[in-house]
Length: 529
Image (cartoon, rainbow, N blue to C red):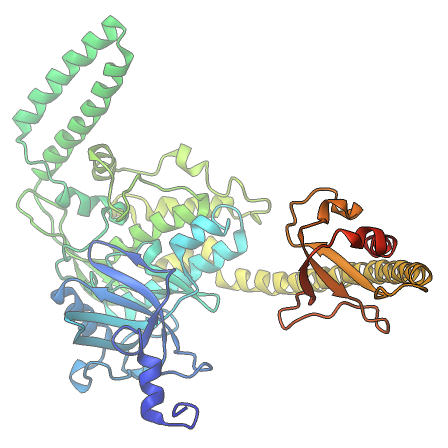
C-alpha cells in the first residue's frame, strides 16, 4: 500500500529485495565464468525502464590486482570516484565508439562476501556466441567486412591514441551493441613497451610470445636424445605394422623436434630495434631468448590476435584447438604455435568457402590473413597501415555496398511483409467461412432439439460431457450412466456456452441418472450430435 502511495523508501526497499549488491537483479542466462572472473547479465533496478543504462553486464573479478589494473587503465581519474558512483561517459579513457564504457564499479562487502566488480552496458552478444549461433562466420560477407573494419579501427584507437595493447583479444572480449562491435576486458592490457601480464589466452597469442611461455625446460642435448629414442620406436612400430603406436610416436617426435628448433633459435643473439607506429617511436621488443621471463607488449601482438579472430570469422573454424579458457589444448598445439612460419594453404582454402556471394573479396581476405598470421618480422607495423593497404578493409567500398544492401534489404523486407499480410488475409477468410459453417450447423441442431423437446419438461438447449475424458463411446450416453458428468446450458439467444474468468465452460456436475437415458435420451443425443 505504501509503495502504491509513493513512499520512496519502501519503493526502494521493494526493488532491492533479492538483488545483488542491493540493486542488480541477476538474469539466469547469458553470463559465463572463467578462471579469473564471473560475468552476469543483470537489470539495474535503480534505473527506470526507459533508461538505456538499465540492462548491464557485471564482471566480478577474482584477483584484486587485476581489478585495480583494469580500473586505472580504463578511467581518466580514479581518485574522483568511489564505489557505486555513476561514471560519466567523459570520465572513461577510451572512446565509447570502440570500447564498452564503464557505468560504475563496486568494491564492497555484501551478505558476508567481499566483491570487486565492474559494471558496464550489456551487449547483445559476444563474438563467440555470434560465431556459434548466427551462421555468419564464413558465410555472410557483408557482416564479416563490417566487423573486420570495426575491430581494426577499435584496435587502432587503442594503439595510436592511447598507446595501449589489449593483449587478450579474442571472441569473448568483443561484443556487439546496436550493430557495432566494441572491445571489453582490459585486465591484461598494458602500455606499449611494458611487460605483458600473466593473464592471457594462449590460443590467441603470437609465436614470439608462445616461445617465451612454452620455453622447453629440457636441455638441447636431452631433447636430441629423446628424439633419437622416439625415432627408434617409430621405426620399430612401422616395421611391425603397429600403426596406432607409429602415429603416437610421430606426434611426440613432432613436439620434440619443435622444442629442438625453438631451443636452437633461442641461442641466437638478441637484436634491439627501433621503429615508428603512427609517427610515434617505440622500441622493438627483442625476440624471445632463454634469458627472458616475460614478453614485451607491442602492436604486432594485437595484429596477430586480430588475424586469429578474423580466421574464425572468415572460415567458421578455429585456427588452433583450445580448451574452455581459450588456451592451447596440448603440447602438439603449443608446438604448432611456437614453430609457426606462415599460414598453410589448406587452411586458407577454407576462407569464405561456404559464402554464396563473396563479392570478389576471397583473395583479399586470404591476403589479410597472410599478413596478420605471419612471423613477427613480416607482420604490418600498425593497424593504420593495415586499414590503408588492405582492399578487404576498404571502408569506402564497404559503405557503398552497405547502402545498396540496405536498400535491397528494405525492398525484400517490404515484400516479405506483404506476403505475410496476404497469407493472413487468406487465413482470416478461411476462418470466417469455417465459423459461418459452424453457426449454420448449430442452428440446425437447435431447431432439431426444439422440435424433439416441444412437449418435454427437459431444458431445450443443453450440452453434456463426461468428467472422465477417458470414457470411450460416451456420445451414445449409455457408458455415462452412473458416472460424473457436467451439464452445460446453451444460451438460446447467442447460442454460446457461458464461460468463467479463465475462459472455461461453466456448468453443473452431477451423477448421470439411469432414467435420463429413457426420458431425455433423444434430446441429449441430439445435443451431443
